[in-house]
Amino acid sequence: MTPLAPTSPQQAPEPQHPQGTEPRQRPQPQSLSDLFWSFSWLALQGFGGVLAVVQRELVEKKKWLTPSEFLEDWAVAQILPGPNVMNLSLMIGDRYFGMRGALVALTGMLLFPLLIVLGSAVLFAAVSDVPQVQGALRGMGAVAAGLITATGMKLVAGLRANAMGAPVCYALAAMTFVAIAILRLPLAWVLFTLGGLAWWWAYRQLRALPTPAGETP
Image 1 (cartoon, rainbow, N blue to C red):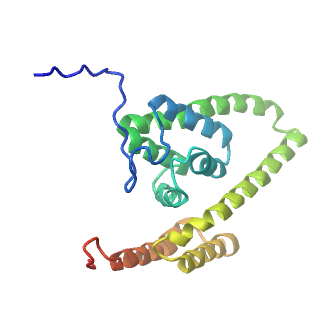
Image 2: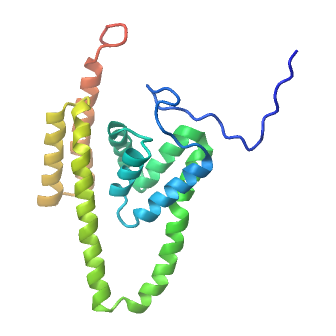
Image 3: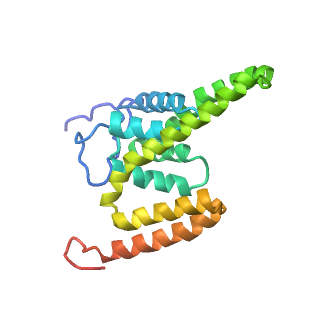
């Protein structure tokens, strides 16, 4: 009988690949260290407005997610309790390395920004009344809004393959904009009404899709 080769206790578990893909078909985090430093770099770039950065890093540069997968994961992350990007880091870390990956990705997201926030709070207390500092903060807010708008425009193309259909997606996006930006309705109301309507329509469309055996469920 051939003896089994010893297994290193430091060896990372085999990553779990997203459904519908094969190993080596797409880039993926190679180790827990890669996962940690990737999310640390992402967090440092996206300080104060991470949506634009997380899409560019995970979809355009690293290609760990396709635009459609990013839209789906980001939608789930938004409805879960807690910050969106934290939820997304937990989902991606768990997907490739299980619980250890989720904790490592979350640590990467929190560690260095936490140190920067503590240091900035000490410095800001001394200069918070300076007009130039207040103007700089308002300018940063305008830049963050522009980045988020640009990212949203990039992701519009991913809606074409959505099960709900592109016209329905566009209509829901327009109604959400009107409800939040113009009518100033509470976010929770918009989420439960329009989100519930979108969930029902997506469920109806997915139920109508044929099964692999050619039968409708």
